[in-house]
Length: 492
Ligand code: NDP
Image (tube, rainbow, N blue to C red; front, top):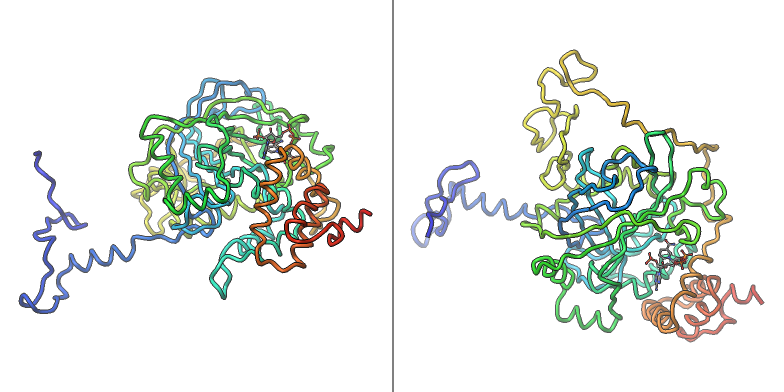
């Protein structure tokens, strides 16, 4: 057997005894000078960092994005040029459950990707659904409160969820996806990923195109019914971790087809729906999906905490050739994700190994806790401000994106006025088979257990506006009839 390394203190000195505490006599009390015992206990007390308020429970792996298509006329981003291969980290997650929650729970799944490109990290922090529950970030903290525990009972509250949803008609599209088969995939490998927001691409000629990013599972969509999920959770709370980790260990590397939908900049003024509204999709008939490449996951992390828990994804991370859009939810996330990581991991979270760009990094941020740059990230102790005469880093105007040609009067526009919240959810309901529709409505009825009838009626009324069969199907499962639904009475 090869010689084993000597156990040391964190300061590097050899540890003489890691079995027996220092006591005054064999039966006596501990001595305060047993510094190694105290350090061991103190480290244990600090092993946990704050869990994410949302997307706490996650599973992740490394892989590659290969570009096989050609969208170079839309973007100069090097990561998207034909033939490019870029290392990637993926982290999947549930939204509501805490770190110890069971994996096979009905919930939206996070689908976060970090591309380590030669022009900096590009993070696409999406979900397994193309839309979201709210379109105005003012409502995001309220929505998340309804998904978390009730302050008094410390239990999840069906009433809070359906109360909020029934008072927020823009949520009905996402609620329909959540309660459908796609709301409970059997593993992260059996679901699509969507950038969800509208982003933009820009090319060297300074032309901007709006874009939606899609990752379509090559493993096929597979889902659990609620009853199957209960049985899975009874056996294992870690079914996703087992499935993803196990597949990659066995060399069965999951893949997704990477696609984009492209909208010319001017089209945004004439689509009947707001293309920057996160509760809407762009119909494939209007903006077809274009194949761009393949995402493959092929390496498990060596250390879950260091590489998956410490991973910090933020939509603020873009690279030249890719940018944002006027989507209000995206703009709020540009602030709030990086801010969440500053709180959770510390100011210098991007210098942790898993978050560190693979290209050179030069900036003037200074000092602070856990600054592990070993000094300044300018590479020069005299260049600690800018402009300077000491060869410090300078801006590169080639990275400047074209102007965002959107303007209007600053005001608080009522986002619920004049919006069609029902057509797309209705289209989704109608593309489901009768069996899928029945499972959807059964799942809704199950999730409405214990909810006051006034809220049930209001919500079934929203489903009715998507499609009368949808509203009546939910109403009858709840012991109501069409006559009980306000929207059905109004339609008579
Ligand atoms: P299409 O018929 O062209 O597209 C329908 C899309 O719906 C499919 O391509 C598939 O998207 C997705 N889909 C199919 N079956 C299901 C299901 N059982 N549950 C959830 N999604 C399913 O029509 P449109 O583009 O006009 O979309 C119609 C409706 O489909 C939309 O209102 C929306 O609710 C839903 N949808 C649309 C997407 C889009 O980007 N246009 C994406 C996902 C859903 P995929 O290929 O992404 O799996």
